Image 1 (cartoon, rainbow, N blue to C red):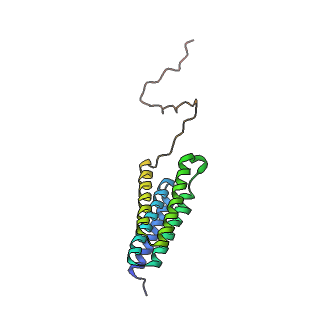
Image 2 (tube, rainbow, N blue to C red; image 1 turned 45 degrees about the horizontal axis):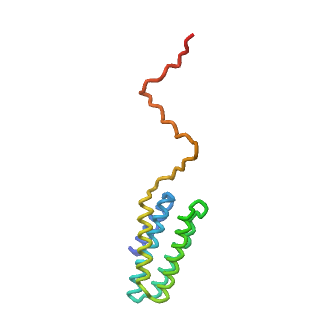
Image 3 (cartoon, rainbow, N blue to C red; image 1 turned 90 degrees about the vertical axis):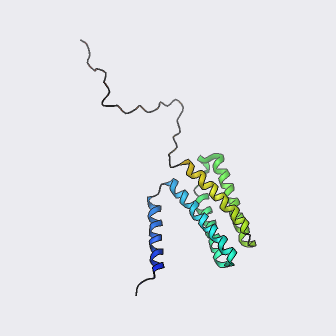
Length: 159
């Protein structure tokens, strides 16, 4: 008649994630992608050690999908220059290591990718959710907002 407690918890969790995605800034979305990939890799390590081959494969596929279709696809190679190119190569490397780990049942490769994801996530979090301001040559900084309590210069003209 009623759903199980775990199905209710899963539905609640799904709604919470979807709500978080809708309300998240682009910066937060990248952090969420790192979190999702790290969870998939760490759970794949546990499944690999437990001998759950189908579960391991599904989770590694999920991590690859997050890296390729989320993190790597979000790179702006034109605006990002060498940083974006280096990240692209690193994401490609991680994907390759995940495939090799899956084929050869090597948890140390999964640990390596997990460590790379963790380091990148920490770096991304250190950047913060601050928009980058790029000054243009010769541009004047914006004038401060007038303070209504400061004395104002007279606008009266002597005749």
